[in-house]
Amino acid sequence: MLLLLCMMALFSLGQDERNFVKNPSFESIGKVKKMGQINQASDWDSPTGKGADVFTGSKKGLPCSAPNNTYGREFAMDGENYAGVVMYSYNDKQPRTYLQTELISPLKKGVEYCVKYNVSLADLSKYACNNLSAILTKEGIGVEGKSNIVFEKEREFENVLYHPMNKMFNQRYNWETVCDVFKANGKEKYLTIGNFHNTKDTKYQKLKKVAGQMGQQKAFAYYYIDKVEVFMLDDPSECDCMQEGEDEMQKMSVIYRKQVTSEDGFTPAEKIKNATIYFDRLKAQIDASMLLDMNNLIDLLNENPSIKLELIGHSDKVEAEYAKNGGRFAAYANMGEKRVNKVKKFLVKGGVAADRLTTKWIPDSESVSGGESDLDKAKNQKVEFKLLQ
Image (cartoon, rainbow, N blue to C red; front, top):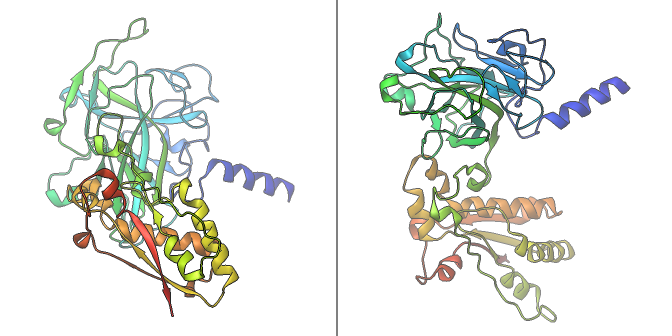
């Protein structure tokens, strides 16, 4: 029994309970003797005849050790192990490789998920490329031989996910995040990571050899991969992997700070009216500055169990315009709905019965600016409360 409890504790430390990916950082691993043995990492495999690689800190010496290995030197982002794949090869002289895993459970139709993984370009890669991508499917992908998995038809790319800028990842000695939002069609259960584009449609960059790096450069773009995640999305900002300078709007933070002189002597109805919760732009997470109001509202509702509330979620028209960019940005649509659901969840967790709370949200198309300054717009990023008789 003690051994079982210890094993469960170790699993809980290595597995985020909301992550649908098993063994997300390749820490559960067998004996790795040579390259191409991704199948030694529990729950991972390759869908082609050319296996992806796994590097482990438990192995000393080249080629598949960590941090030093046959393609350079990199410390794991999480734990001591990571995987590696070929995303691009000059003139297709080297077959690409891919990672594939079966999720803990199928995804639910209509629910938004964040798909996220981290990459680092190997030191001896002669090239960097774009089109680093992932795809979620109902069945596992598989091709015979050491072939590239290349999609030709537009519909085949419908579930392919990229970094929002689909940029070339050319950073060595540095982990960068690839992520995108996926709205499930329902029953997707397999995640595959790789490059699914024709070589002619893949942008690449030729790189100089790192000064002092031992070994010969490889004529391909080779990426280490670590910490793979698929999780249900409550807030679009949780799936934000834009780097500084890539999106100015993402860096703007304006939350309306309300002022209530005193709540002493206020009636419950007046307190409820003053309890409006304001949010940062493009976010549904409850800001720390609003926690006192939330907790006061929980106390009021728990002290007055007959009170029922309607929660009304709002967004600003700027957020609605932002969502029209499509793709990953579509996740910023219906921010009023996301905010009101987040507030209801917080209240229920605080002991308020769910059947005392009804919710509605104002459609993005009906959002009202009320002014042109950032502060005026921030006043619309809110959840307000209406006392039900």
